[in-house]
Length: 419
Image (cartoon, rainbow, N blue to C red; front, top):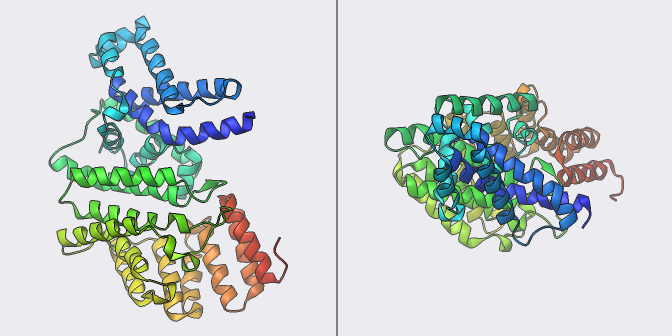
C-alpha cells in the first residue's frame, strides 16, 4: 500500500470512527475540546504508523486503543490530573473505570454528544458546526460549503463553541422534559445536515458517503425512540429513509451520477421506502400542520410512489414546495420549486424564477443554481448560454464526479464530442 492509499484509507476510517471516539472520550473526560484533542492524537498515530505497518484488521478498535492510552497518559500527568480532579471531581481510577466501557456497549454516547454540542449556551450556527465536526467527522471546509459561508467563519465558530462548553461546564447528558423539546430542533437540523453530506458529498472523488447517511438515519431512529410524540422527528426520519432508498440507483458502476428521472427504480430500496412512508404517516398523525421536514418527506413520497418517472405528480410537488416556502423560506427551497415548476409547466415558466434567484447573495457560489439554469437554457435551445452555465457550475463544485458530469454536459450542448 502506498502512502497515498494509506492516507485515503485513514480518511475513510476517520469518517466512520471519529464520532465514537470523541463520544466515548467525552464521557470520560467531560470536556468536548479535550476529547477531540485525544482523538486527534490517535489519528496522528495512525498517519505515522499505518503507511509502514499496514492498516490493522480492526482500524476502529486500533484507534480506540490508542485514544485510551492517550487518555490514561493525560490523567497520569500529575499537574493535569490534579487540575482535572479539582475541576470535575474525577481521579485516575474513575477515568480507568470509564475507559473500560466499550463505545458499542453504550449506544447513547453519540446521542449525548449531539445534545451536548446543541446546548442552548451556543448559538444555533455554532451548535450545527460543532456537531458536524464531532459527529460527522467533517472538516471545517466541508462544513463551510454546507452552510455557504467562509471556512474561517466556521473555524471560529467551532473554537468558540468548544471554549464555551468547557467554561459553562455543560453536562454530557441527554436532556429531559421541556429542555428536550427546546433542544430538539437544533438536533434535527444537525442530523439532516450530516445526512445531506452523506447523500451529496460536497468534496472528494465520490458522489456519496453512504456511511454518513447510515449514521444520520441511525441517529434519527434513536431520536424517534426518545421523542415518540414529536412529529418533526418522524418527519425527518421519513425524509432521510425515502431519500436513502435511492442510493443504489444514484450512480453508475463507475460512480457517475444518475439524475432522479433517469434512475432505475427497480434498484430503489422498497424496505426503506416502506419505513419512510410509515414514518411520514406517523408524523402527519401527530400534528395538524406539517413542519418543514414532514413537507419535504411528503415531496420525497411523491417520487417514491411513482412507479415510473412519467407518473410523477409534479403539480402536487409544486404545491408542496409552495407549502415548504411558507414554513421554511430559503433561496434553496425556491430553486427546488423552480425545478418542479419546469417539470410541471415547462422550462420557460421556470427560467424567470431561477433568474431572480441569481441575485441572491446566499447562492452566489451555489453550483446547483448554475446547473439548473444551464439545464433550463439547454431545453430552450439557448445552447451557448447553457454551456457557460454548466462550465460555471463545474468551476464551483468541489466534487470530482459532479465536475466531470457538468463539463460533459457543457461539451454536449456545444456540440463537441464527449470524452
